[in-house]
Image 1 (tube, rainbow, N blue to C red):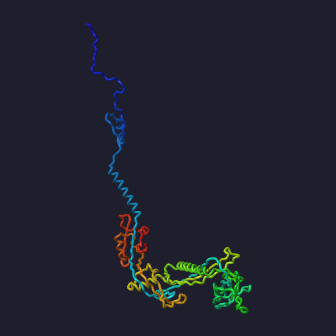
Image 2 (image 1 turned 90 degrees about the vertical axis):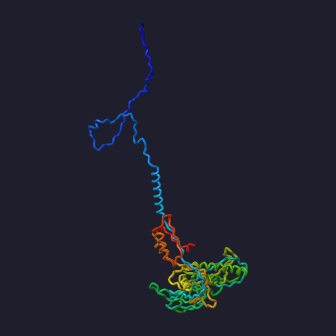
Length: 453
């Protein structure tokens, strides 16, 4: 029997050898250990720095720590509220609207006033005046034989004695060239006065006109002597000097404005001058005084024609119409007049401080039978009529100071102590949850509702 080699059949086919399928041992992993307060050197040397494990390792830094979203949102909300409250606290403010007590009464009463009185219980009055002149260049179409005297102003000096020197109207003043001018009105020239220990000549202003018509009297600034004192010791001690040039002198045929044009222009100038005078005098009245238009008086001079030399003028055959005038009016102290009105309309009130907001709208009149003259009278009887708007007055600064730092409730208590003066009050604080008035006056607005209307 042949001995044949037996073929071995393997039931299990081994996998192909490849490096991909080689099982590798677990690699050592380095781990960090917390530092111990006491170290055993021998034990530490015997312990390996790493360990082998087939487990999967996880470290704290491999995965972030998860926080609660509710906690995050709560923190954000608290922060926002803190910012809002902090900012709003910085912008705290208060608005306090006060409506004072008021009353409307009908007035129709007579009053008496004394000129320039200083008595505390007397009503006084003053007279204010102002003057103005206006002019207009117009066409001169008519001719007329004109004889006009030059006029101007001079200052008369009295260096003769301490006594006043009176000069009558038509007193003659002479220039070095022998031209004579006469005083239009009488004048009293004061005597020598002492100023700063030195004697100073007294002086007075006077308007003069040429002795005769003619252009030769149109002169510049000159010195004058008094003809009547010639040959006396007063001649060199009482003298005059020009304040203005002498103008307006003319003799001959002159172009003039026709009577029709003159009447028209005179009416225009009159109204224009009255309006200008009224504006001027009203602008001069102090704020604490009242002026009634019914007390205004105008004094206007006739419209004068000033000749224009056609040879020297840029507007030949023309003339200047000049109109002069003055205005005077009566004024009263507002506080004193208000007290007088209140004493007649509300006699039982004594200590309340009241003002009349429409004082200047009352109707002023002087009885027809009165002989009052603004230039000479010292007593004035007059009447006032109209609806009087009375408003009680309180010290706004004092009240605001009293309210600083108070709650709304306490502020209302303070305001209620003004019950006879204040009709109602409204307090608004910001922001809406703030219930106190700030301590800083700059953040508090106190508004008088009747004055803000």
